[in-house]
Image (cartoon, rainbow, N blue to C red):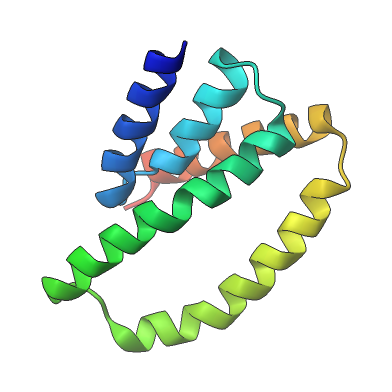
Length: 116
């Protein structure tokens, strides 16, 4: 299982670097195939996100693909929302959290499928 976990982490890291949603896929892998509880998987995913997002950010800044004004407008609301969500996730039943995450994934998929 360790080799499979490593391969899943590497694949999701590459996808994260391209902005494809590797973190969401990693959550699905951990909860559905690796047997990790939802709240623990989300915590692992947050820690995993730090180095992968830093590497992607360096690459995107280097290539001139980052709009600094957009970053500034999104950073504070993003940090506040992350803190509130982490608190909520720590206080919600794991099964309810799994269902909410599933609903979120379906909603995002529908929006992407039918959006412009």
